[in-house]
Amino acid sequence: MQKDVNFNLIKERRKIKNISQSELGRIIGSQAMVSRIENGQILPNLQTIHLICKTLDLTVEEYFYTYYKVGTDITDFRNDLNEKYMSTDTTALEQQYSDIKATNTLTLKHKHQMLMIQATIYHKTFKLASLNDQNFLLKYFDQIMRWQLYDIYLLECTLNMMPSEKIKPYISDILVQYIRTENKVYVSDIILTLIVKYLESSIVQKKDVITDWILLKLADLEIRENSNFKVWFLFLIALYQHDTKKINQAYTVTDYLNNPCLKKKFNLIQSIYLR
Image 1: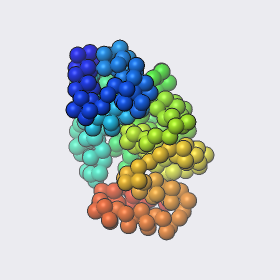
Image 2 (image 1 turned 60 degrees about the vertical axis):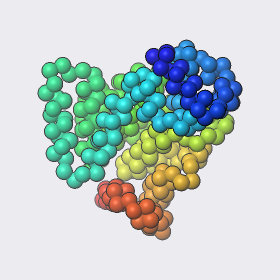
Image 3 (image 1 turned 120 degrees about the horizontal axis):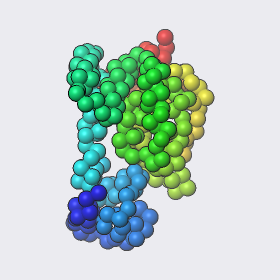
Image 4 (image 1 turned 120 degrees about the vertical axis):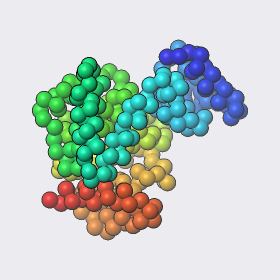
């Protein structure tokens, strides 16, 4: 951690917004915690980062880039894959995979990137990865004691090519780590994106026990009213419950939002689910 940079960013942004340490402390837990974070003595968890960013008008990407000089790499890579997922041509993804595979030094990061690309290609059909690739990822996730942004994005990008029941322990750990159920707060987009992806996979894989478990967890979460996640959950839950009326409502929302990409995703998921 870069102590001086951390101190300057949070403290100076607090001054600009006229927010005291004690005020920020009431939001994230305590004034002492703010002081220790500003001075680089502790690392905040993802929920705390979300609250700090929301209060100080920072994006999560700005936070990680400024604080750690990491986070933007995995964020940019993941966002690029999401864009390519919408393309019907997988040539760019296959070329990207080949380029990384041809790297002289194939590091763990490179292997993770290759699996993320592979999962993006498989996402179009929800094909499962080979047992070797599944075990490689599961072994990595099993060793995580504290889930960081990199780990969460890796899970988000690859879970669609693994059986949903094998992912449940990791989702449970992340929710315990980052969601305070005794004091409801709005859930960060990072966590919601992960849950949407997991719900989608469980439904397409027809793992009803897992889907029901996810829906129970969703009941404890607060989602902003104007969030795009609302329409995602409307569509996925309606699809699972075979509620044609609500499915049509979800499509109507995509028209209202003028979001053809979202409608395209809904079409793909529905076509695979109804096979």
